Amino acid sequence: MDNTMVKALLWMLLAAAVAANGFLSSEVDGVFQVVLSVVAGAVGLAATAGLVAMKRSAS
Image (cartoon, rainbow, N blue to C red; front, side, top):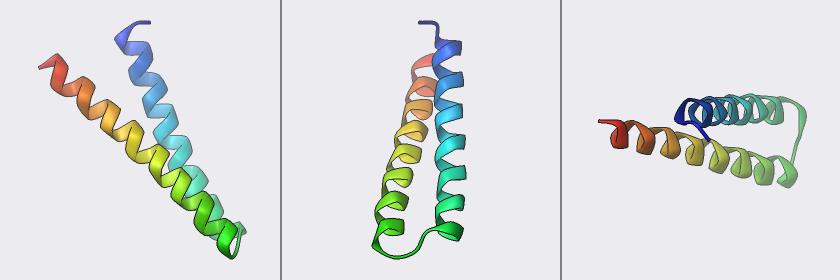
């Protein structure tokens, strides 16, 4: 897999996690919202960490 393809996948994953978090905060209530927001946040952080790691390895 090419680095450009991996970067694009990580950016899409990050965008999806942010969108999911925004949707969950407006549509879902209770414990289910908290659990799904934590999962979406973890996915967003993992995608961000992957992007940072790729940037550092390219330098």
